[in-house]
Amino acid sequence: MNSRKSTKLVLAIIGIAAPLFLIGNYTGYSKSDLEPQQVANNKTFKLVVIDPGHGGKLPGAYGKNSAEKDIVLQVSLKLKEAIEKELPGVKAILTRESDIDVPFHERSNIANRNHADLFISIHCNSANSDQRVKGKNGRYSTRTIYRPGVSGTETFVCGYNRLQRGESDVAMRENADILMEENYQENYNGFDPNDPSSYIIFSLLKRTYREKSIKFASYVQNEYVGKGRLDRGVQELSLAVLAGASMPAVLTEIGFISNPDEESYMLSEVGQAEIVKNLVDAIRRYKQGNEAIAQQ
Image (cartoon, rainbow, N blue to C red; front, side):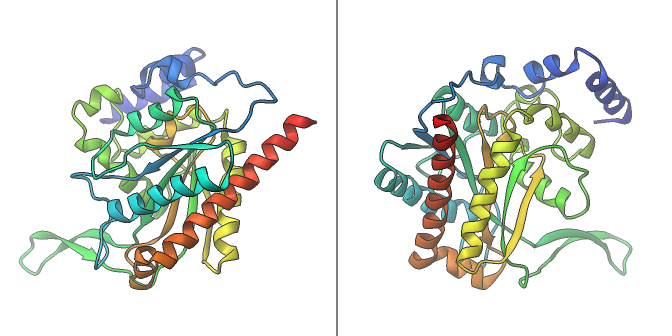
């Protein structure tokens, strides 16, 4: 996106009519998908949509022995089973049940069409990064910088952030799959995941469910920490997979696949069972909180 287009985008957002126009036209979601659902105070919590990140030709991050897309699918399948077994009256839907890719806008649209009460996107983190380096011959090449010592869990809610170094790396990595979608410019109306100026739009999309999303994300992190996991906190980040969800929504990074110890943990039956329990317990606490408020 050139500077002229970026300026026009910012000016449009400032305008009086900009929020309605942008919500209906910028992301590729329909207006009905993005309108807040009219929810009665006594609505029963009954459906969770689980989104295993990446898939198909879009593997996500790699560890020494695995790909992100495979780990998160394994965890998601087990999470669905655990929710329906341990939380009576609550159902779960997966955005994918096999090794296929699902466009970002369709993942959240699945939750919207089914009137989900909660949307959880599951991912593995990576601290590795590619850098352009200049060789002795004056030519540039790409070199991977490995950081195997970085560890911990973090959970994101969708919001506008300043895209500081490190935060921007996460947002751009998680949003990069957009570039592989057919007609992605049409689906997202010019959004460029590599252009930081594009991310300002997300501040308009997620205010309605921000508080509840942060509350649930905090429950998730508390469960991780209770099992001895390193806490990297709850953060707001401009994530396309969450932007269209018309309900509280989070993206949780269950560990660093770039860390050999955490990769082994996430691949193990014990590790996956513990992660699933953390998420089920967080959902249970969130559900109970909602029901307590409804009874007041």
